[in-house]
Amino acid sequence: MPKYVIERDLPGAGKLPPQDLHAISQKSCGVLSGLGPQIQWVESYVTDDKIYCIYIAPNEEMVREHATRGGFPANRISAVRTVIDPTTAE
Image (cartoon, rainbow, N blue to C red; front, side, top):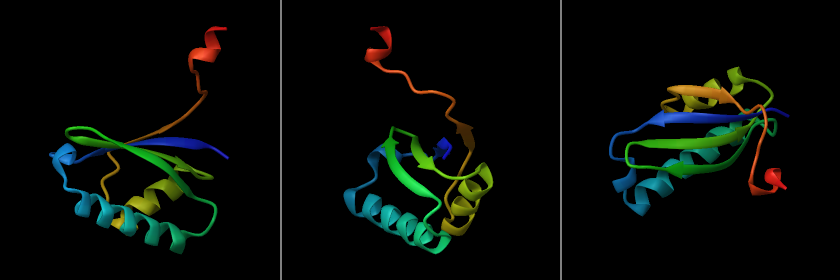
């Protein structure tokens, strides 16, 4: 199943209080539940002004549908082609 990185522009994201992050996470999970088991949220990275999310989904359209239903920005969706880490150097 393809993996995607979603870049979400959200000014001030890094200053969001825990209760706001909790609410965003709950909303995302609710939308995912409605979309079915084909799409999965792996994790997200919160930076100062963006949130980068990792999703597994059959296609980009399903990732966009999640963003639309949740009211989340999806400014850029990139398919992951390969993953490297320090063991790649061995």
